[in-house]
Length: 251
Image 1: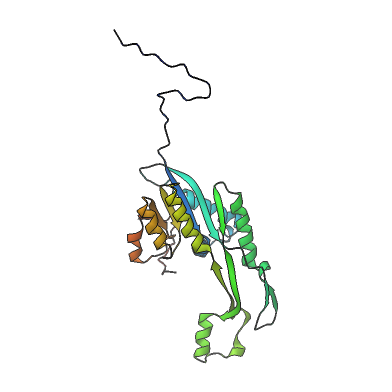
Image 2: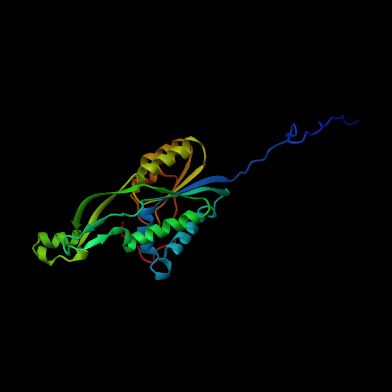
């Protein structure tokens, strides 16, 4: 005779004793994007004018990131969040040293593009915009190729044109935010995998920390060549954007 087992009467709002809770077996993945590197590399890969609008760039960025979740891997992956790191455009005015013309940097083509792109990214689901700031020293710099010509006396100072000079600005806080977010995601066990879209070795200490905490760390350099010694600090190398038609030198 089979052994009779008394099944407890369930109480509304309370879990049934002995019931099993099944959790998703997918791998939570956070994707971190170095905005400065992404835009520079994007413009080298997507050469068609139709791909250059802020709306199209935001759409393509989102697709590039999501492809990391649907690539041919053994484990399914869930998106935790996409973090995009950049700086708001410079909002000051300055006089050009060659033409003496007043320039409003907030109205330049690049500033308008960055502002619109940030606005588009804010509309996307599970995309977090992480902004640093631009620091300027009120200095103008001669472009390297023109500086060489000046040193060789191939041209004179009076030969410099408006486009031969650049206003010096530097990003502040972006690398620190990337490092802090990698550490926070790792220590709090919020994800099991981090994908970093970047192209330099500044992330190496943060990558080491994440791997020590058991995080699967993937680098996406958008097909840009990387230093060979970086391979020992990552768990994988994968680019999901279109591959350039020709082999490029390291940028």
